[in-house]
Length: 246
Image 1 (cartoon, helix red, strand yellow):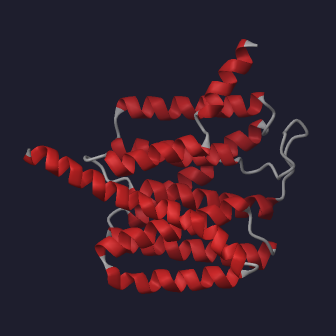
Image 2 (cartoon, helix red, strand yellow; image 1 turned 45 degrees about the vertical axis):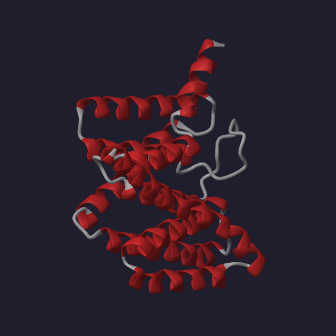
């Protein structure tokens, strides 16, 4: 019984909603570090995970409550991107300890509940480490607006790959791509409205890739939700400035 309770707690460390909520809070309220890339990388992790599952087509263990494919593990992939990014970003001993410990406990709880095999848990982090490392090497010093455009184009490409190779779009891919569009467009609107031309081009492609217009409109709710984050950040910044002035 105690192991089950502990496993539930450890598994919560990799919960997509929890980690995304923390990332959103860091983005909105952090004054020392800009965590825009963390949001984009997490959304990208959702997209490529959905594609990889259908490419590998490796069945989940019989003990798994899901009928979906097993590898790569969505929990492990999302948690890896989150904690590895923060370890690189903040580079403190406490952050390294927190990140590594959280990933080990997450992997253990996933195997304990039978969601994934040990090999799934060991191999999946390679994708997250590679994506964060690739970002840091290729885009680490790039202008933020350019980074946003690259991720928006990547979201469109992921949609194309999904429809061409898999002939369908999974839920995580829909959320990730539309959220990337909304989040990126909101920031571009504040920083460089001219670059919105590309975001509107992505929007047109999103409509073309959807099964019907109704589906596209429903999916746009994710764009709206994530488009609010930069607005909240701007409001929080203004409030801090007013407090300082007073």
